Image (cartoon, rainbow, N blue to C red):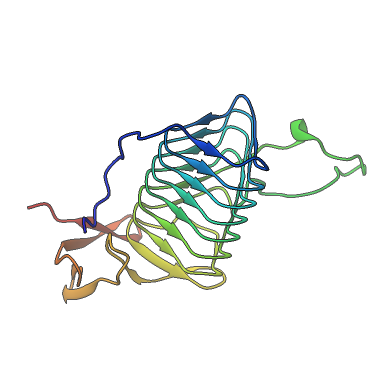
Length: 213
């Protein structure tokens, strides 16, 4: 099994279940499947071979790459952007309002023009565990993993494993999802593929880079 999924070639027209709501202006990639009761809003763009689970929501203008999986009842609010191969577990929420209020200071009901939407960006191959919440604006790094139930309030580095409320880094993971094993003080190894990763500092935060042959 290849642990490094590549962009899939389109194989078929999209499959959209009868009870799903897909706006006419949304773009659905070849081979994608939209399951019952899912809602895809206007201007959303889904790549090829995506799977949108029952009751999931994709907001207006949201961009999903190829091979993205949104499990049942995941909520992805605009202007989120998800890279290729992203996994979004059941009931995950990607928010878009830093200062949520139903009304303004005068008590008038707020409308779309009364606030500025901010988004979550999720890098290629990242996974968001069941019922986790990503509080925008922030970025989830490539191949990072967010544990089930975590509440993410700050950027997550590539390959980082975060968990808890609020989420904190608890280690590193490789592209298979397994925890990396420390081989040297700043060298990590994937137990599945034997790939080697080098740890360094980017400002005040540690970061990881896959070593190329």
